[in-house]
Image (cartoon, rainbow, N blue to C red; front, top):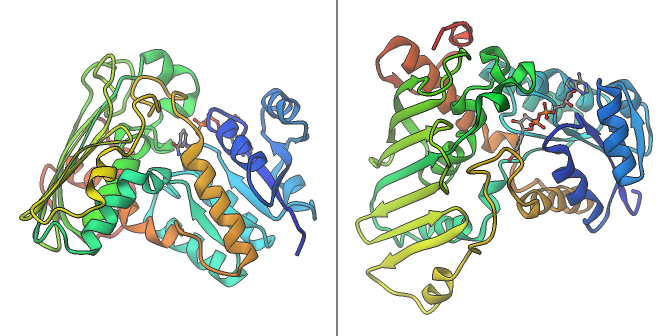
Length: 358
Ligand SMILES: NC(=O)c1ccc[n+]([C@@H]2O[C@H](COP(=O)([O-])OP(=O)(O)OC[C@H]3O[C@@H](n4cnc5c(N)ncnc54)[C@H](O)[C@@H]3O)[C@@H](O)[C@H]2O)c1
């Protein structure tokens, strides 16, 4: 195996510089080429990072210097690109959500497994130190019986943001607040307290009347372990505040705001607890008010892990198999909102959810 793994970026849009920076700052990774159907975007990013611009996925797949492809295209285009990358023997890192249906998600996982390539997803909030501390405490049983796992994502995106690119206001492309913005935080709830057994959701458009998307989600979750959860997610709430993740059990409470641990209380105090209370920095931007208003540190961890996993022939820390439950919960939310009633998991795909009007 080459000392440095070669990376190709597919989709040179808003999130691409975060991947590019993570690759060039990694141990053992090198950025080789940047691809976009929009030639100017490919050239601009390629010039910034001193690599080759290309215009088609074929050019990335035919390049023997490229071992890993970062799929950073709009949500509805991940599926086809991932399948083609895996069939060409390239490892894949896909942006969230991995796909728009369970059938696509399962097929992507299956093709990557058959091709023996790593298949990771950048639900990068999982690697935050505060979330890892919560995960350990859940696994150690420190919360006791879990009672509540909630998230509050009160963000703002302008109508100009939604109109800046056709896919950003298209339901079929996966642009609604539930699948596009809240995906990370729904993922954290299932990662920390899942699995989820039942979902009841309502979706509405509060302040973006010229687009046919939900800008606001209110949902109730029932977890298999008996805990309950609330999800409030919106891009209608100016100026936007930090996302909160709250976990309550009979013996403890933890709250993360942004990336900072703001509450960490257990009946059985541990010597490490004081340092956990100081986790997270006030200054880290977390996208509350703007789409590119966040740091690349979390992406860096995910990308470094993929490099290390390939070198040591192990599974990645965020395989898409671990994100499939999030896809299912999100799809169940759309089904529940469309039908006006609760939905039990597991579910079957219902493509009509992407045709519904908000
Ligand atoms: N993990 C995160 O925190 C995070 C943050 C932002 C965006 N994202 C995700 O990243 C993905 C991209 O989002 P974005 O905001 O960068 O979108 P974007 O519209 O800014 O960029 C997408 C780019 O893909 C290009 N493209 C479209 N079809 C293509 C094709 N067939 N071949 C090559 N290029 C193609 C477009 O021209 C565009 O430049 C989405 O899945 C989004 O959900 C994740």
